[in-house]
Image (cartoon, rainbow, N blue to C red; front, side):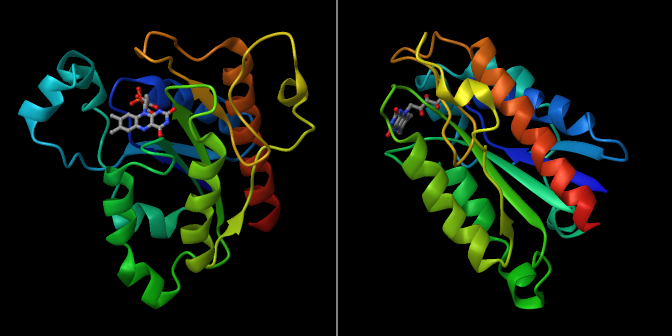
Length: 202
Ligand SMILES: Cc1cc2nc3c(=O)[nH]c(=O)nc-3n(C[C@H](O)[C@H](O)[C@H](O)COP(=O)(O)O)c2cc1C
């Protein structure tokens, strides 16, 4: 049973959450977990101006996802930073390259799930994940979120990302906040939850 985690991350927050998602998925017996990124679409000079050149040195080492990898996965967990309340353009472009998979019904019946990161506390985690789900449903995927059985969903003791729709973290206005323990726990929970459902379906 294959769980594919595919994400875009400019500064590393979504990448950190992807690691935690992978840890969770690996906790399910028989799960083969693969982590991939989507292709970059910004020119290097723009990445430099956005202050992400240093972070990209390591982030860009992650292999780029192929359409065959999507087609052969039993579950796909997508990670995207929020851009104006929705998924980033890099992820949109990647999804828009999956038309041939849609025509063949290659993703029908697979589990699909989404996690995210915003700069601010109310910057659009829920709108990003929910609007992403529309594409998964067009592909015929079975959408899975982050249930309230993850107790960290309901805490009031600290500021935290995440929602019933999917795990999330808050980077802060300057991007200097990394995922908290609670947010990472949510990501692990989601990874395990998706893998467990995929295992039952497989
Ligand atoms: C063009 C652009 C649009 C953004 N839009 C939002 C937004 O709507 N809401 C928000 O809270 N943060 C927004 N952000 C902040 C990003 O979501 C944040 O930098 C990102 O989640 C960090 O994740 P990463 O380190 O994995 O790239 C935006 C950033 C950029 C560059």
